Image (cartoon, rainbow, N blue to C red):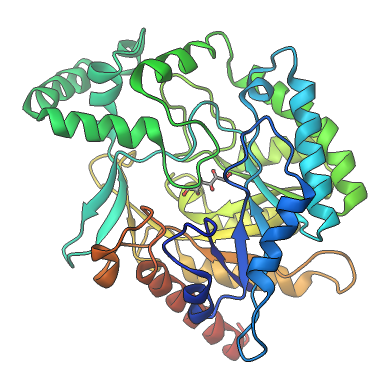
Length: 399
Ligand code: DNO
């Protein structure tokens, strides 16, 4: 497995020098400043590896090996006329990346919003903070801040009453923070940051688009992208919908093992793969992660490792625990990933799996620094160190 680290570019408070000290050698990044409708220009792509890879001989090397992510324009997800122009732009960006020898590309197909959390600084008993998705807070936002048309039919009377009572207790500042956390999204998101009114309008565009229609739009997109990816030997790795279920009445189609099975049965190209985001899939009790690694082995082109702890009274709510303390069996998952790698034939084009510690706690010096929520330095370093310990132990014991 190749230890990787997500870096948001020169403005990331976690610098390349910091990354070097974590021991990770692979960098995961993107041209975050380029809007979804533009092609990533070769000269801008080339500037990044020079920044990442050029170091004095005395320092250990870093390499940009994974793109997370090329954004998929909303026109493509909506299946709007004009989408093919945006698909061509995606393909051109992919060609330019391959010309710079970057051949693993993560992307997602979540309409309107990317990964969503209600709380970006959920205090843990240790004093560190974590990311959290709280179903009650989500409901408060949906019903009483967003006031989404038709939302009430998604909730029971009990949920509506509880949300109303919670809303009445909240200060204006708390309401603003909740709305901002949801509509502005998380660092590295591939969708726009909205105000509440814009968010309403973005949701309205999906009226009439159900799961089947969204799937058709994904297949149309991949139908054009995959043949090009094959020629370029590029591996595409779809990221699951986070959290993995419908939100705000939007259809979400990459949530379960069945969803992946449907996708790969429809488009069996070897370039059609997945980002095994253990935290995302693992936030659903019905996803058996070790079994998923066995089932989709060769299609796992990239993995995000993190642990999610679901609430006992409502498993739709969760917080991000330390990397080995979540509900998923991280040790078995790593064991299955190591086994998958051992099955890959040298020269077959399949590579070692790049893994990155996903979402760390904000802890120690992170708490006094400017930090991208989830993308702290020390919190992620703790996660990586724990994961590395598991990998070395399993390798040494040969299990
Ligand atoms: C959040 C991330 C996502 C992810 C994209 C992948 O922290 O896991 O933003 O990068 O959804 O396309």
